[in-house]
Picture 1 (cartoon, helix red, strand yellow):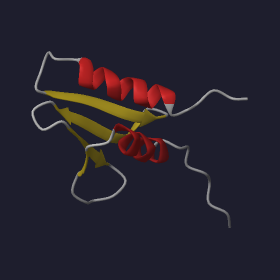
Picture 2 (cartoon, rainbow, N blue to C red; picture 1 turned 90 degrees about the horizontal axis):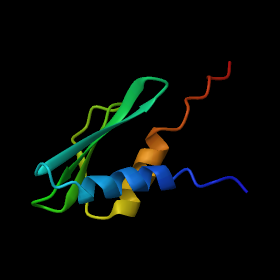
Picture 3 (cartoon, rainbow, N blue to C red; picture 1 turned 120 degrees about the vertical axis):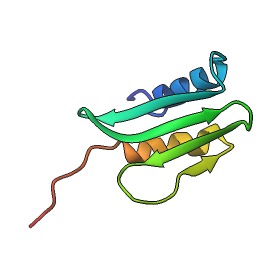
Picture 4 (cartoon, rainbow, N blue to C red; picture 1 turned 90 degrees about the vertical axis):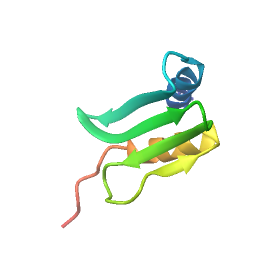
Length: 84
């Protein structure tokens, strides 16, 4: 069985919650050196704010660590070449 690929994402998100050095914690999620998403954790509001760099829409807010982890997981999947 392969190890979970969600676990590293959840560990990074949990680290954001635990880090009290700033009111807003920021992490970037990349694939092959290309930033796919930026996540902010707002300690005052207890929410994650996800900016998806693949689309031009407003940031999404999540109050559930599992939901934001799934979104990040989907955004950080390798891009498959298009079939002709």
